[in-house]
Image (cartoon, rainbow, N blue to C red; front, top):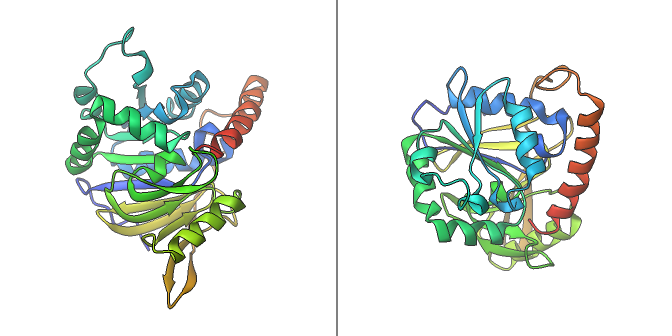
Length: 270
């Protein structure tokens, strides 16, 4: 598959996990996002709602994108002290990036602020929508969430048809739940490892990419009472020497270690 997503198309990049919030090794994904946007230095806005607008996630986002884009973020938890027109700001972007965390909390808070309609308008306008973990599953009809404790399916925004399960190789309990739910009638869909992204143009999957050698994605569906996993071989992205901003300092290593621990915790609630 090739990218095939012309400028102005309704595009979504759904990533299974990783990205700037957990590993500088995933810097090629940020470069890929910038390239798909079609802009030399795209305007990229982070929605960190699923992680409670965590300062660590926001800080790592700026460090990952400041060399290749014009980054900004919207903190829905802090609108009282930092008021902004959500619609105006989001529709002025070229990329909207949704961070990981709790899918259930993400969707509930977006409903309070009327973001479902704004994000659909952004998608129809040709703004690239992307996200990792909960920020990946939110675009589909269904995702497999841990927001309520044990894994179970939950409804997303439905911009993309079918279902999505993230952290596929790193979270066996979520994987088992996805298998069981698809066999029980859940809409078929895509299972994605950390570090892998699925690029859609409209409802059509046009490219699978990864920053991690050996990471995969799968089409998951049921037929005749049996589960079928079809591997989707990704294109390995070129590494970014030293990460996006060059060699990582000691503080960055500490940030990355804390972020990985936090990402593991959030996977239990994504």
